[in-house]
Length: 343
Image (cartoon, rainbow, N blue to C red; front, side, top):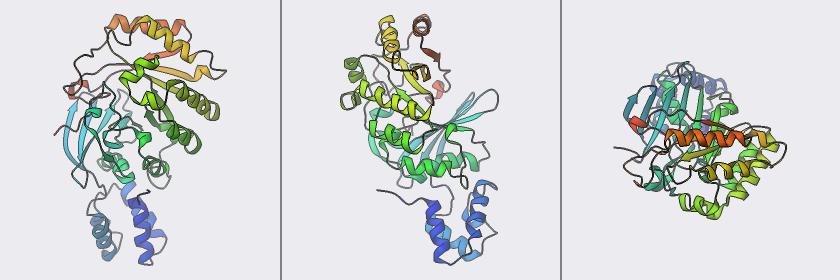
């Protein structure tokens, strides 16, 4: 079911009070250009209208409240409380050249139970609304941070939340956040209906597929979703995506010592991605060093650096583009798979 976003509600309030059309632009200008965080402070509006906005939507423009912030070099992790007290985490990354990127959550917890991920141990509490998703980014914007790029790699499986597509419409709306599709990345464990919908509706958004093992039985052990949407079906959908969009697809692969980091794994990943067609050069493997937390099983350990180098070399020898992703934030549990709603 579609939830009404605050931006639609504001339009409705203006209509109910028969306000002139330019009022909407004034409000959006106040939020997105002047970075005014409370409706009461948008003084260009008549007092009755400010009061009505605050009465209907609450005093603050953003519906998520920062509860706690942890900061380490280049990384800031914010714990947000939603209106019903549920909590989610978002991460701000600052790269050396000043580029700011954000890792945003789409669900309170996650119901897919991938074995290596702390978020999955919570289970799914609920989907976030379009406002709760976009307000994580709005919080950073209102606090003076540039919005250069964002990824849906926070808590939850983005394509499992139907409100994601409403959030994408808000983020790419030129009158609101105005983000180009190419500045947005969505990570998925392979939900076929969502991949196909993304191909149709937001073809220029970057897509990352979490692979983590090239062998069906092992991938099913790590990621139960593989039984519902098997690897080969997902890769066929990714082929369709590349053919339709002409864009790269990123393959995320977390390296777990002695589990999925052997030469046979690297060769099997290459075999999966080669021979798919004239577009196969648009697959790019991102290797991710594993981050453990207290919430995930102790049976997994990070691969040693030599094993990682061999894995990369094997992929490249077999004609597959691959890079090892630079890790930020593991010291404050803000890296991949570590978000856990810490009190």
